Image (cartoon, rainbow, N blue to C red; front, side, top):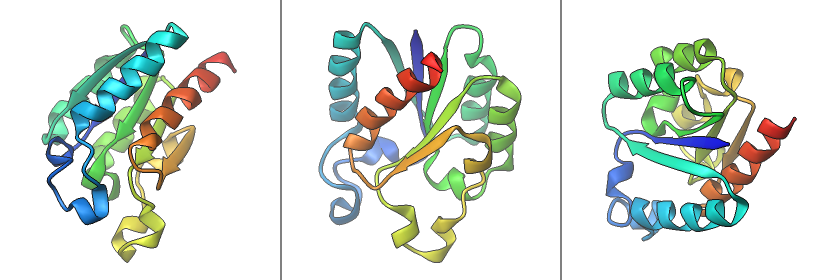
Length: 144
């Protein structure tokens, strides 16, 4: 089993970007902790980050060639991108939407996700642990 973790805009700035909201853990730190857990579970993981909507769409479209599940933190594109939503719907793979923060406890515009209707589930509000929980969810989704 191979899981693709996709990260959207500004997640490359984790650790320094608004640490009072997103914490001080970097994306590299998150990747390392997920890789450690995945290794013990005999699951392959690959991480990608882009600030470009078109690049994210391309990765989603090609994911079915070698991945079993997509885990996506689309960041701001969660609330704006019909293109990412449609590519998830079209790719044929189960997808899990994740967020570091509880988007429902934040600004009103963050409460609507274009992705939720085409994802198997959503994990939000657990900080960096959201990624570890998503790994467990990916294994569960694939086993079902």
